[in-house]
Image (tube, rainbow, N blue to C red; front, side):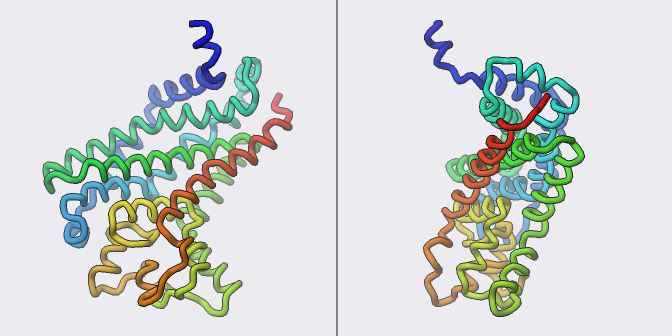
Length: 304
């Protein structure tokens, strides 16, 4: 038993406490309820494109826009909140390195959020079975796992920002003004402006350029990367838009304001780096790089 205990990660007790704290609080469960209400959006085009697997599409919808703001809201105070309240002194007194603290915070909060998010997905699944029949369980699990990876990525980014800021106001400004608004809500517009600056002309979704650079820019957003990955799983198309919009763009004659690789590269082979698996790569980069940079700064900061 002693040798087993000695092989356990040092951050495990902290992660366990973080997870328990999240599960005991009302915020994650309120988020789960809102996700069910937000995500249940049956549509004719969705049914035509996915059939009973439309239910799995609801899980992707749950992971878009509302989930990021909820996860960031529940994570941005993870370290800076304890720093301003003084309780971080107790954590620093434990036999943990500062890297252990970062890892424990990210894993604990991710697990604490994964449970209510998974519960919301199960409720959506049950509703979908009643309304639309049986869907592919493997597809459901795959999209849910991608969603939980997205949750962990958002927790990691928020924790990284929390570790390098000195006040909750600054952390909130960076998290919501930078990460959420820039990279989630308005990233498509920013990508268009960046491409117009470095490229030769402005761009619109009705006349998207067959240029890998532009589509690579679009999926630098963690939210769009998540939807690229889950759209691949759903088999609807290579795009960072929601599954329903992608189906409308590619499978109906309706003209819609959506960027899709298939539409832009008609009759051409897109670059290999635009394969949908790049969405997974982008999520992993967002998961690791900000936390690694924060670790460097966090280890050298005077936190007391």
